[in-house]
Amino acid sequence: MQNHHVVVGAGPTGSAVARLLAERGTAVTVVTRRGSGPEHPQISRQPADATDAARLRELTAGATAIYNCANPPYTRWPTAWPPIHRALMAVAENTGAVLVMMDNLYAFGAAASMPMREGDEMQATGRKGAVRAMMARELLAAHANGRLRATLARASDFYGPGVRDAAFGERVLPRVLAGKKVSLLGDLDVPHSTTYVPDVARTLVAIAEDERAWGLPWHVPNAPARTQRQLVEALANAAGTSVQVAAVPRAAITMLGMVVPLMRELRETWYQFELPWVSDSTLTEATFGLNATPVDEAAAATVDWWRQQSS
Image 1 (cartoon, helix red, strand yellow):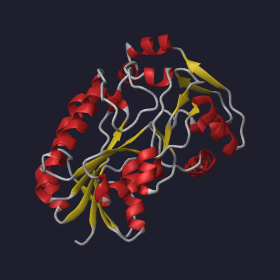
Image 2 (cartoon, one colour):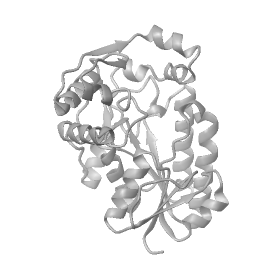
Image 3 (tube, helix red, strand yellow):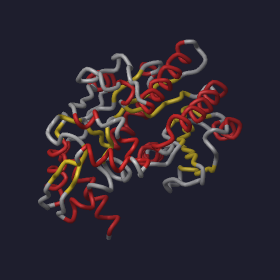
Image 4 (cartoon, one colour):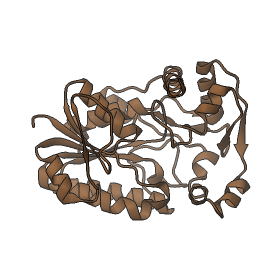
C-alpha cells in the first residue's frame, strides 16, 4: 500500500495523528487491542496486542511510518512499556518503516534545568521517568547503529479536544464549563508548559516524513508557558464562566496514595507541578516551520469539544 502509515494507539494523540493523515488522503491503519479508533474512509481499524511483533508485522507490511502512540496504564509503566517498545522496534527493524515515538518530559527528572531542551541530560530517578529515559536511549541508539530509522517527540501535559485522562482533562474542563471550583496539583503560580494535542499530531507527522528529524529527539511546540492558574483562566474565558482555583495539598496526595494507586504514582512527579516545568521548542519550530497554537485559540477549541460531549 503506497504511503501507508500505521498508528498504534487511539487515545487523544493517536486519534489526532490518524485524522490528520486521513484528512490529507493518506491511508492509515489504527491498531488497538479492541480495534477501536476514529472513523474515516482512509482509516482501517485493526485489533492487535501491541506486544505481538508477529501480528504487528502483518499490519505494518509496506508501511512508510509507524507511530507509537500507545498509552499503557499509568500505574504499570515500568512493566507495561518495555514489551510494547521493543516489539515496535523489532517491527521497524524488520519492515524499514520509520518509527516515531510519542514521548514526554519525564526522562529529564527533578534536577532538570529550565527550560528543558532536546540535548539536555536525561537524569530521572523515579520509576516512570527512568523507563521513559530507557526507551528514548534504546530508540536513538538503535537508529545510530543502523538497525532502524526512528525519531521521537516530547510533549508536556496535554489539553485539547479528546483529552480526558490528564491534568487538564476531565478533572478540570467539566468544572470550568459549570463555573465550579477547580483543584490542581502543586504551585498554581509557577510557569508550566502545556501541549495542545493538535500541535502534537502536526509534529509527529512532520518528523515522520522529514529525514532531518530521524535519529534525534524533538520538542513539540508549546505556546509560552503560563501558570496553571492562567491556563484555567483562559479556559474559563473561552467558556464564559468564572472559576476559583485551589491547590491540592501534598499531604492529601500522600494520604490518598495509601489506598488509591494513581494518587500514589503522582507523588513521583509532584515536582513537575511544584516547580517551574518549561519546555523549549525553538529547535523544532526553526527546523520544520511549526508553531504552537495560541492558548486562547486552543482553549476555545477545547471548550467547544467538551460542550459537544455534553450536548
